[in-house]
Image 1: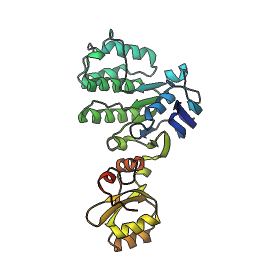
Image 2 (image 1 turned 180 degrees about the vertical axis):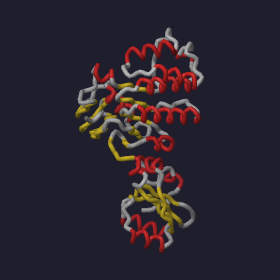
Image 3 (image 1 turned 180 degrees about the horizontal axis):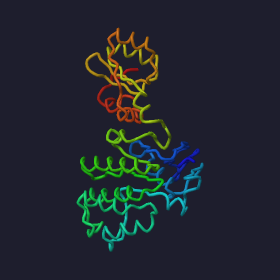
Image 4 (image 1 turned 90 degrees about the vertical axis):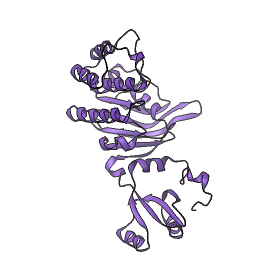
Length: 303
């Protein structure tokens, strides 16, 4: 059984379609990264999947059920974001016990061990924590709940680099011991790509790519060479990104479909061929223009 299925899913706010005719399937027991720029529709999509928002059109199924106001889905899913709200009268230890009463797979030993590691006093109150420490407590809940569907929406807001690394490592270690479906939204793909199995890239509520992370790393090539040569290459293939890379030099990002003969000929002509990092590729694919911010400064763009 698939964990999540969306078919032609749309969520609209008036005339704005935050999620626009989106279709994808998430298999059980995989870590999927939901990637996109601000305003791409990531949070709206996650809230529809979690059952917090009703869809406008299309179909969404979580463990074969409509998630909206569904107690079965709620009991088997946890949604973690930076807007978590808890009663101010309960200390952190009280919140752990409340979570233990709701989530059937809850691991209290893990939760308390992580609180101790991150120097969170169980007698502290959530509303008195700093932004970063609130985020740490949130992810402790998300990992310790061990829900079949675990959703993290930008969970590391306010965390320092060390805390973020610890979170990624803790998530991966517990996932390997207790597999579940994890959907992780983040702007920091370069930090999380090593723990991702699949990547779902969206732009303006639409799906751009959905593939294994290993395939995304091989999806495109970077070509750098004389501007005249790059102009010829730009005419003959799909260009994902381009900019001037120095006097009379240009850089192109193209789909990785060059034959060995084409690569050999390009190198003989003086073209440097390099890999394109997955994080950079996602930025290029979701950019408003192929030249990025350079369009503002450089009027002599490649055609």
